[in-house]
Amino acid sequence: MNDRSVNKRWNMAEYAYHNVPLYRDRLRKMGTVWQELADRSEWDRLPVIEKNQIVEHADDLVSEEFVADVALERLIHTHTSGSTGTFLDVYWNKEDMLHALLPLWVDRWKAAGIHARDRLCQFNTTLANDKVFEINGNTMIVSKDRLSPLYLEDTYRRIREFEPEWMILHPAMAFFLMEQARKMDLPAFESVRYVELTGEMAWEGLRAELESSWDCVVNMHYGTMEVQSIGYEEGGRYRLYDQTTYVEVLDDEGKEVGEGNSGNIYVTSLHNRVMPFVRYGTGDVGRIRSERKDGKWQRYLVLEKARKNDRIRLEDGESIPADVLLKPVEMVNGYYQNVIYQFQAVQKSASQMELNIVMDEEFGREKFMQLYRNVIQDTVVGDMDFAFTFTAGIRPHSDTGKIKWFVNEME
Image (cartoon, helix red, strand yellow):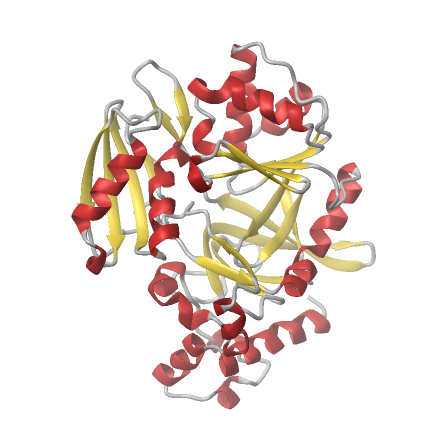
């Protein structure tokens, strides 16, 4: 990593520890001050942070410089998808986000000539007013819960009418669209020339199958809402964007594992000043390797266990993406300002689903259960038997060390 990237990493950390309440509180608990950590050789003394540690205190992660902008809704407001079972609002300054995405846009252009003005189709867990889709300028956003076999043909037709030039979607979603289109003998998306897979690991052979079926370029992007771009797939691994995000691999005690060794992936955004994420756990596992390329060292990340959305098995033998279970949670969080901190669904059988919830107790369990049932009953899984369990925390899986938001015990 070059000196410029190292300086940007330290500059962001210094900014965070001077302007963000959460980081200042961390220093107080450590019994130290920033000056004692500012030696550039002491990076590993900075504490790591996990999403489940900050979700109940997300406001403390906003820089004091941007508090008024958040209140006046002057910023880009997004949120994590819940793919790890934990929900978090994320804010970005537009200029910072553009800088964070710049290397990704360069790669999109190199891969398929994709420009920001090209028509994009992407997918969201839920849309306002239970809409099937919405079009904002050159972007079409499709509700994932309307991609069940019941609604697919109409939704598929609407996407074709929009004539997107590229798409962003999860591998499981891409596979589902491709397979259902085959079963229903639906025509291909002739206008699409590039598909970007993100959000979970793609299994071997999926990209080639998509490229053959859709006659387009397909590639993988690794990123998060918190830091945006992390890396771009190249030869079965991700070429890291060291100019936008610092990536490190640590053991369970927060120590570096060394190049080539597997561990937990932590990221530091070099651009998000509104919500600085410094040594932030992605919940993924992988290893880093460096290689000489074009006269300079390039770091690559090999993902081993990443966020993966499983599929719900229905009684008729069909399966659908599990995202439909997130719709009621995101609606509640959107309307009542994030009262649900963590959520996990466990499919016990084709007719039984167990839901584990960590929430603000003042909101009321009965109220949440009623709201959840009201929303889910209008979906393809509305007839399932839902059992609710409220808990103080959801434990990581014993094998992966991660919190998987959806578990299919029928598999």
